[in-house]
Amino acid sequence: MEICISDFKARSLKLLNKIHHSGESITVTMRGIPIARVVPICAHKNDIDLKGTLIEQNEYIFSTGTFV
Image 1 (cartoon, helix red, strand yellow):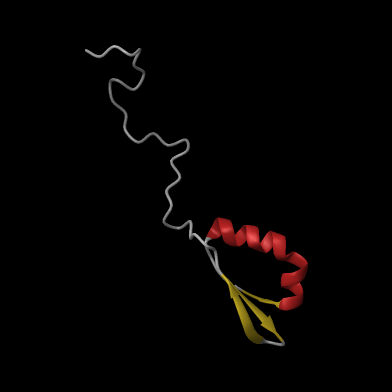
Image 2 (tube, rainbow, N blue to C red):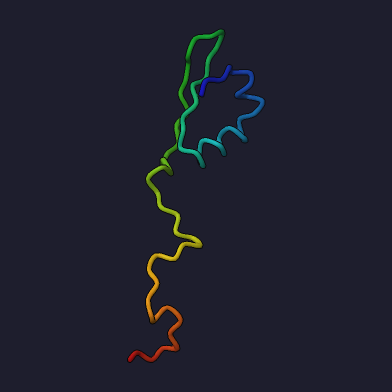
């Protein structure tokens, strides 16, 4: 994504949040010339979010604590 410096200044908090969650980078320009690139520290593309995901279902999934 490419954005001019005045738009980056006006929307910086939203853009930084977007970068953090999407993992993409932003190139900041001044008069059409790239002057900076903003990149996330940790790209979330490789992170696995297991929240709400059932990895394996078997007969012990709802166990009472005693195993047969």
